[in-house]
Picture (cartoon, rainbow, N blue to C red):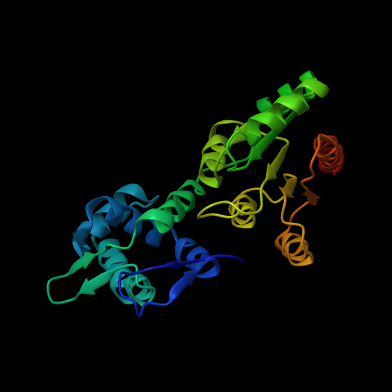
Length: 260
């Protein structure tokens, strides 16, 4: 995994690795708490329990309220405090946060969006089969490059449709509303890398082909991509041959996925 982020404001706070962030955001209760604190900055534990009961898929009675309060105070808040994301004062029951901003805030947005199902509906799949169109989602933060790649691919391949996104978060947002047959992503993007984006996708869809398309051509990058579950790895080149190679890999990956 790549990247690290400062959780709190103090110089002594250790940077948070992406593995730690995935662990923190893997729990729905912690996601709800952090998302609420990002908006409000501070809340009492009773307020947080009410938010968890309202937003989460729960049906709390009075006994359940006490149980979730106990879990919040003894399990979730200590973990969030340990990572420098919140502070909790038991004397007045108030939880505060000033660390949910910039890169960590974008991670939180992505973690919350992961709760939504990314898989296409049966109607969408039938429509894809009837039209014979390969739908590709392309994520790359380099200005103008995604549009250039998409324009070339669609011009040379009438059966391929490319939707572009300039960040991993925008790509996840697009996945919420549209089904795709393959995802192509740059490796190094701000805040959330292509491999971190892959992890978020794999949490909901273990089968969709995911191809890393990047200028970073080291053995280390390739090994990380393979270890993370990337379907294929294509290195960017200086001319349009790279786009033809990418389309070939996309076709092969989609064909293998559909034949399973």
